[in-house]
Length: 287
Image 1 (cartoon, rainbow, N blue to C red):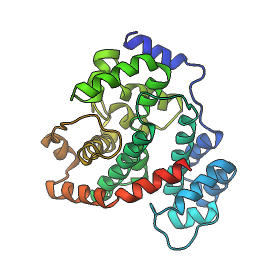
Image 2: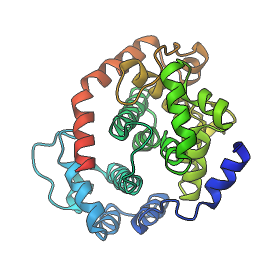
Image 3: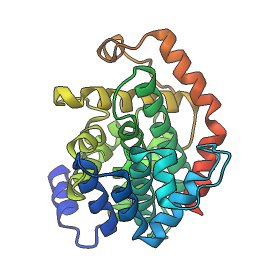
Image 4: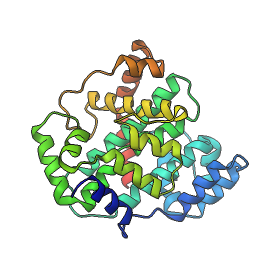
């Protein structure tokens, strides 16, 4: 099965996971500048399962608030509009992709720890550089590898070969995928997120966090941030990491992001400090 066949198959999979209705409503609300925090809270609260997990995450050590948050409306006030939006998306995607309980080719818990860590690192980069919409950076980092789950779920026999090769070959995952499947997880993740009607600011870093091209100028910072975050996570050996030798970040990447070596060291240290919180987020997400 070649690249075009897999692309076509992804588009035509009838039982491809569908997200809860609350997700499309949250995305619509987020794209409407007139949406109030109260209205967002009301939307999330309508889905009992999603709202319960959002509250669990809001009260986890990941956010570290001393007083207990008991309602979605209170969560919006304490955590903010953008954070509650990102939590609702995180919970919905995690639950949707965790429905298949068949054994996978790779460790799913390690996969999600890597993803949460990448989201955390992406947000730290955005915060360090004082970039706007920092919660979107978290979501983009969290979802950057979704294509791996789709490839493993719907093309399982082929993806077993990929994972077996990764155990022997130190090259990056996406190169092995392209060699054996003629397509990589980033492209498949882009197809999935577009099918889920995610905004372009999320679809682009998911689809292009390895190739980096072609990326529209307005989406270059978030795509580069996810790419850099992925590099930092692999260096930190957080979660699912096959690559034994991770090449240093290019001077071109750092120049485009305008991030100094000192700032990069600071982000990496703060990421190390966040390690326990990342695992706490995973525990709350999987509860």
